[in-house]
Each structure stands twice: as structure tokens, then as C-alpha cells.
Image (cartoon, rainbow, N blue to C red; front, top):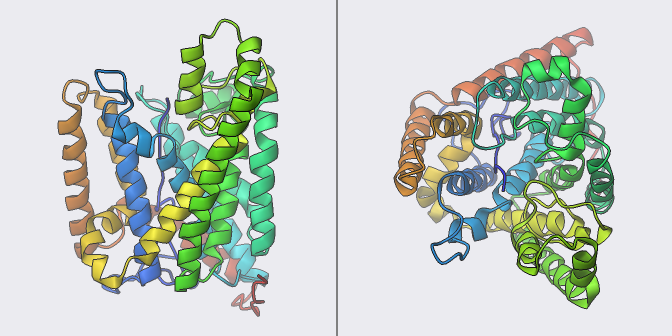
Length: 422
């Protein structure tokens, strides 16, 4: 299985409540809104899950999947990608998207944000990492999201559904025609010498193919355009997400039992029943076979099939809704997760560098809890004494500069903001 990831809050700061009017840095000393605290806690939870999947064993000595694999395998990275969409919504106007010059400025700021995140991902590609990192894909997510930033919520959800249904077919078609997993983690050198192969890898054949994963990004933007301070919206996310996840898993299970599994076995005779069962349960490694389109019924993590994408999206929406529903009295208990979630770009890169050392194989639990404790301490102390994490500050300062430059070209850039239609 492949890396979870990812990402980064620094891949952007969240929110209108935490940013100035050009999408800039959080104001030190100002308590984040309950909405932002819940989003940060959800992102911190995703980082916790990613570290667990990367560090802890996946199977017990009896061959049974561990709790870390069951809970977080494939789903932590999906939660990060969904929250990336939420962050995009927050930094482009929240419930009422920017219009006029401000919209242009915010979109150019997102281009700069994507470039910085992708550049750091490409630089990490020079290291021999034991896991795939999502940062380069993240840059592509942000670029592909630009045309969707002005859409209404219903159109964003429709776009997410279309990506979930159609992109997996394009992905499967491409696996026999485009370079598949030619790169573990593409570097800047790969981008210069083999741009076509790298593009194919990032869009369709890699670990986190951007076109299928736009399902999470579009849904996240839609969620970020909602009134996340409304308890009904929070409860709706938790409930609808759970129903979506259960429906995706249930429909896939029924379809496989009604002939899908037999069709897969007939088209892929070199795989045993147990091997097919492992792919169905735990996902593709690294990609699904292309012997038959029946493989697109598989709900396993990282399979990037319609059922896999919708299952992970449902779990992501439900997790976010639950964190938002937690009462303010729980904020103190959530401080470690929220602090990690506020600087996941910095912490994720730090995690990859720890993994690069490959010192954890003989003591996985020590390395897991060591990283969690270190990241919590660093995040809490840094946030209280300095504010934004270093990589988050780099992104924030750069995007603010870009936005201000664009605004300066057209006066103050103020333009009436039309309400978002529901």
C-alpha cells in the first residue's frame, strides 16, 4: 500500500477567520473560531492516521489487519484531500466567494500556493523515501481546482460525483497506455527530463491520481462554502457522510457477490481467490489490474474506484462533522490535534524526513509515539510562542504578496460579493 498523506494546512492557512482579506497569515494571540478549531483538529487527526499507517505494522503475526490499517489505510489521505478543498473555500471567500479583482487575486495566490507546495514535493523526490509523498499531487489539486472555485455548492457536489464516477474509467484505460508508477516520488530532474511521464503520473497513474482525487477536492470546496458554524450543517455532514460511506461499501459488496468477484477471477486467472480478496478488502498495490472493468467495483483503499472514492469521502465528511460537533468544552482535549492540524505542512515534511532515516523498522511503536509526542510539543509551543509554522508562514507570506500585487494593479480591488446560491 502507499503513503497516506498528507497535507498540509500550510499547504495553506484556513479561513476567513484566520486570514486577512488577502488570505494571509493568522493573527497571533487571536483565538481561532470554533469552526477553525474543528477543521484543524480533523486535519491533525488525519496526520495522526498517516503517521500510524507509515510507521506501525499493517498485519498481526496471525495475518489479521491491524487497527491502524483498518482505520486509517487510504482514508487519512482522503481526509487530507477533502480538507484541502475546505481550505481552498476558506481562502477564496468562505461562504461568499470573492468576485471581481479580489477573485483574480485569490486565484493567482492559489497558483503561487500550488507552486510552493509542488516545489517542496519535487525537492523531496531527490530523497529515497520509503513512502510516496502527496505534496506534488497537492500542487496539481490546487491548480485543477481553480475553475471550480466560483461554482455553487450544488454544482461542486455534482462535479465531485462526476469525478468519482468517470475519472476511474479514464484511470483504468490509461494504465495500459501511459507510464504507470514509473516514479516512486518524481523529482525536479524527472520533471525537466520527462515532463510527459511525470504529468501522466500525477494526473492518472500515480498513487494519488489528481483526476479521481478531485472528488475529494470539489466536495471539500462545497463543504467549505457551507455554514460550518451551524449545528445542523455539522450534524448533516456527520450523518450524510456515514450514510454515503455505508452505501458505497454495501453496494460494492452486493455487486461483487452477485457476479462481480467471479468475473474478476475469470478475467484474472493468475490471481488466487485469497489474492483477489486482499485487493477487495485492502485496496490496490500499487494499481488495479486492467483485465476487466469489474475491478472498478473494488471498495478497497487507494483503489481509486467509484466505490473506493465515495467510501473514503463519506468517512472524511463524517469525521469532519463529528469534530465540528464536539462542544467547546472539548477544545482543551483537542488542543494537541488542533495544534498539529494548524501546521501539518511543516510536520508532514518533518515526518517524511524521519521516514527517510528508516530507523523505525525494528521499533515501530517507539517511533510512532515518539513522532506524535514530538510533533504535539513542537506544534503547541510553536503556535503559542511564534504563530504559524515555518512552511505555513512561507506559503502565507508568498500568497499575500501575490494577492496584493494583483490587487494593486486594479485599485483596491473591492467588488460586491454575490451570495452563494444553495
